[in-house]
Amino acid sequence: MTDRRASEPGGAAAPGRNFAKEGWRIYVRAHLSLGSSVVRIALPALVGFVLFRFGYELWRMLNAPSPLGGNDLYSRYGETHRWFADLLVYTHSRHAGYPPASYALLWPLLGWLPWTLARWLWTGLNLGVLGLLMRSMVRQSGAGTRGQQVLLVLVLLAAYPLPVTLGNGQLGILTLTAMLAGVFLLERGGAPRWRRDLVVAALLVFALLKPSLTAPFLLLVVFRPRRLRPTVFVVLGYAALTWLAMAFRSRTLFVEFAALVDVSSQVVVRTGHAHLPLWLATLGLGAWNGLASLLVLLGLAFWVARNRSAGLWPMLAVIAIVGRLASYHGVYDDSLILLAIVALFRIARDAARSGERDVVAELVLLLVCVPLLLPVTMATRGLPWSLVHHVLAPITWLMAAAYLARHCSREKVRTMLPA
Image (cartoon, rainbow, N blue to C red; front, side, top):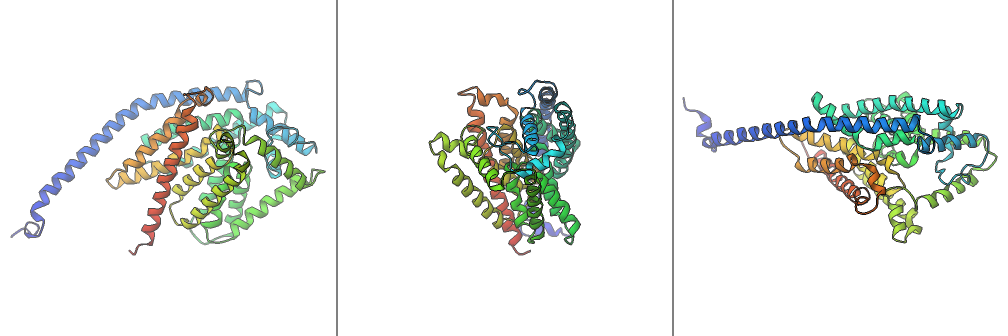
């Protein structure tokens, strides 16, 4: 009996196709083998980075004298106590850049303990939440093997943002974890429920403890669910916390807010790291920083509204990068860029599972990771070392944002095509 495949058009070329396919498989296996060798070399270095950086930052947080250790937490500790004692806060400190609701959220953590116990409680809480954050990121990354999971966790922990966040006593670990938990819960399928929306709102309101870090992600709450209840709950919850905080003050909300805006406008053009207001001030355009940041965030809102049906992780990463660059941030807030690492890892993993390679995703992932693994002290050592964190790193972030935004657009077109 004649083989139909040999008599069909293209049947004779089947061996050639099989040979090409087998050659591709051999190439991929060789590539993965080389990658595994590189990973085996990189793992000890990453472990060393994690141990050194977290060991040093834990010492700073728990044992180093202020302001060397826990300096940001010490500031929040003093501001919280002054707030509830009805003393001046914004005009007393040059960098009290948190709205009233943040002090209502900080009081259960800092307002009732002496400083030494407060810093130990803060450290334990942050380490516990950091474990939950790593577990969530590994699960969301879809890393298929134990080696991939270990490698991803080590990269995220070896990068400087999380250790510096812990050593400074910054709020990023708690607020970023709460924000991600709220967004993931909101993304769950099934019929909308009041109880779930209340939990989502509680998580997101707590994430607004540091609004400069997490507020841009509320665009997902506004545009993705296509219903108003989660947004209404968040607004009401934040308003209630503001009212509670102001109940302990003799000044009006308008007076306090004006003082907050005044001190913030002075700080954002002088300090921080790789953000739009600082760049404008360097060019002599500091008076335009507020308008420029607002326009960038409005553009981000328009983009989120147009692409709200795209994949969640690329959208999270784009929001993180744009939010990081658009307003005042320090080096510890580069933890936002870790979301881009997970998003790029997911894209590269999905391509590998389909038997292909997304070389661009892999290259951008590598470029984003390298500056985060270099010493952050390079940012303060002058030229040419400072160029790594002040110029090269933001360029890699913009490359990642452009690639991920394009990925979202492709996903949007794919979902609109007929099956």
